[in-house]
Image (tube, rainbow, N blue to C red):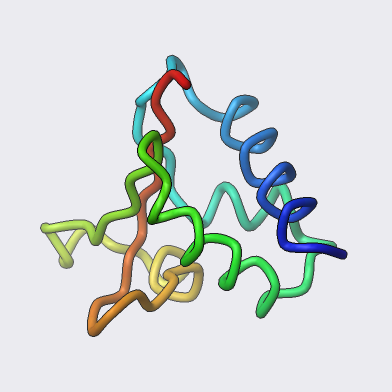
Length: 90
């Protein structure tokens, strides 16, 4: 599967999960929607998407609120585990 195809899957899963464009969605929920997608390919797509104007991927500031599921779903970008995704209107 190409990087563009994986990004399209991420964007589709986000649209299904988000209450509105730009709303925060947990990466654990995105990963659940894309359970059949290779983890390395998904992580690579998420890292690439950070460079897009409409995409934000951030760590959750209150780490005590994170569940084991949230921690397992995190994507490492730079030196931080990131847990939430927002995609704004294009």
